Amino acid sequence: MGFIDGIKAKAKANLQTIVLPETKDIRTYQAAAKVLKEGTANIVLIGSPREIAQESQGIDLTGITCIDPATSERTAYYIQQLVELRKNKGMTEEQARELLLNNTLYFGVMMVKCGDANGMVAGASHSTADVLRPSLQILKTKPGAKLVSSFFIMVVPDCTLGDNGTFLFTDCGLEQNPDAQRLASIAISAAESFKTIVGGEARVAMLSHSSKGSAKHPDVDKVVEATRMAKELAPDVAIDGELQLDAAIVESIGASKAPGSPVAGRANVLVFPDLDSGNIGYKLVERLAKAQAYGPITQGIAAPVNDLSRGCSVDDIVGVVAITAVQAACTR
Ligand SMILES: CC(C)(COP(=O)(O)OP(=O)(O)OC[C@H]1O[C@@H](n2cnc3c(N)ncnc32)[C@H](O)[C@@H]1OP(=O)(O)O)[C@@H](O)C(=O)NCCC(=O)NCCS
Image 1 (cartoon, protein in one colour):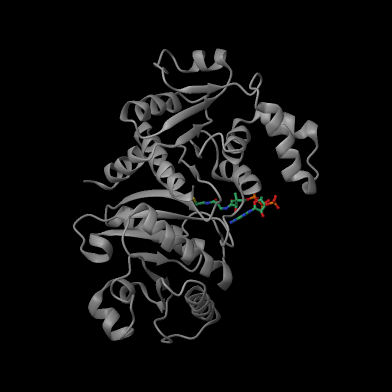
Image 2 (cartoon, protein in one colour; image 1 turned 180 degrees about the vertical axis):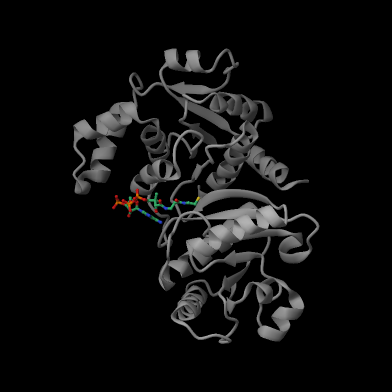
């Protein structure tokens, strides 16, 4: 079974409700109809009945819940809750009403916050920052996580490294330049994400241009310190570093550069030291090794909200909805 088919099977087994707030985009309706047909999640769309009827262009939405912020009986409660959550940032009732009536992303996140939905997927017609900002402001990090970060699941064809070619790469999309403490938190979140999404034991490599002291530089010191913190915070997780990429994933090189390491040569979770290396790294593997790259998927957030690429296909949305549903089932 392919990676996404496996995720869809997991999603079907524990049905969650996912919000798709981008109702000005035809792909949202096509994806919603497909999700419903495949039975991987319940879908909520946000918009006025007139707009939804106009934009969906006759796509059968039977079985999909449509919520209109202008008439929903929950809107007043969301306004009150949003004011409460953001009052220390100066949020007034008027501003909260304006946001919830005019920005479906904020409305969707408040549905998740207030327990009326389990997760949200957006980004087909909004930037990453626009999708993530409301969720970071309102949902916040989950207990124990220092920050929200992101990961990609990479499925490399004809590859026996990692978990038969499957790896989790992090953070390739969100946190610009984490310090040691934040890098440690990213590593621990990634180990959890691996268990949730891929299944099986995570073996976490803290990547660097140095293996076990082979180079000296403050950048290396950061990874060494992050490794120490991550091990201390999650003693049951197999984490090791600092490791070069080859020492992390190739058994013979791991054995020579980091003998006795529980991770070297067998890593399936690769923690990059910063966003530049992470973003460049996943794109290299995607383009040169022709890997499938699923993400960016958020982690460390109190309830799942995931971002789409603006060039996404309907199937991409359907896949991310299933991933979000599986994450939601594990956070409940
Ligand atoms: C995520 C991101 C959009 C937030 O940017 P922003 O809107 O300027 O955010 P701010 O720094 O004003 O933070 C907004 C809120 O989110 C919180 N926040 C920001 N980053 C966070 C993180 N990684 N984890 C948890 N909370 C975070 C802030 O604390 C703030 O909360 P507050 O308003 O309650 O104080 C920004 O980090 C970003 O653009 N990252 C890179 C994304 C990107 O371009 N990726 C490219 C490759 S795909």
